[in-house]
Length: 448
Image (cartoon, rainbow, N blue to C red; front, side, top):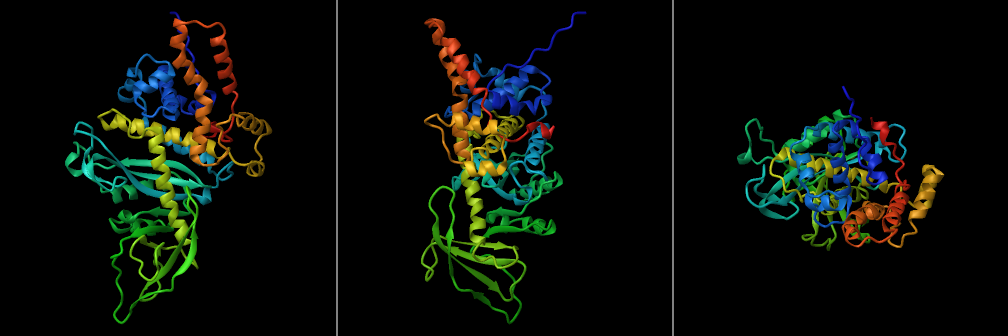
């Protein structure tokens, strides 16, 4: 019997190939592994709408059917992908971290929704879409993100299944119940959290606060202005004096804000605060309320800590737009779940690189390899290279690295019509140079 030699997967761009290699064992079929890599390349790319035909065009495929088949029909384990991605995160924030610190993880629970037409897509229904601020026909998920050293990292998502769209075998769970399940799963996986942040849906509804107390987790959650607290007979409600503080904001200049503690009878383990950026004599607009179990003298820090939730919310809105979270044209949830897991995987890839794009002093403190620093410095000579250390800057820089590979597949059809001597050789040389790029100081193989 003749042995058929197993072919190697097609190479894309080195930093994507190396990251995806960590997941190689999940895809015994080489064509499926190639599709996995192509999707990472496509969602990171600059194409505005991440449709499968558009991704296929920039990675050299004839159409999007191969990618659609990969998401809908091929037998690969989405749960295994999720668990391995979480292992990579744990390897990056372990007991001897290269980049991140496990004791500094802030967990943010939030929901996101997107409009979707019709009713053919699983779990699409007329429901409240939080980021739209109105009811619309759409799909909603509850999501968990970590903030570590000012870098956002995707953890888990769970689809919200409206009661009237449940399938056989489904069990209805509210969004707060999904949040509770997410927190328990992450702790069971071995994550530790310095702080948990959530909006008023999770602060007022269900048993999220009870679960956080049970698990001995510190939290700051939003509450409504009419939030009820039991007060013993003879005790009274009192407001402490307003105190000014500087509110740090991720995407604009700091703002001056004011905070005061609200005490129901006697001060308890759970404390309540009112925050405003308007006139403290009549704080009606631009005012919100939070409650927390953080101990100590926290009045001048609790506002900035809670604002991290808004920072992550803003960050994920940016991620959704850039990576195509809602660009799927799939109707069954098993395929949508695969798409979202690949988005989270690409999101993580960018987050891990973002830490390496730090200024010289921070790089020195991390004791990064000298060849790594030289690589970053050489590629940073590109006029569009960004020196910022945020997630979007990292994405923009990685997009510069993948440009020659993508441009080759866009221009190659014209070279078949008008063959220009040396053009192919020059393109391949530039792609070879891009494959020398090394920016991430994470050893992905540690997670295997």
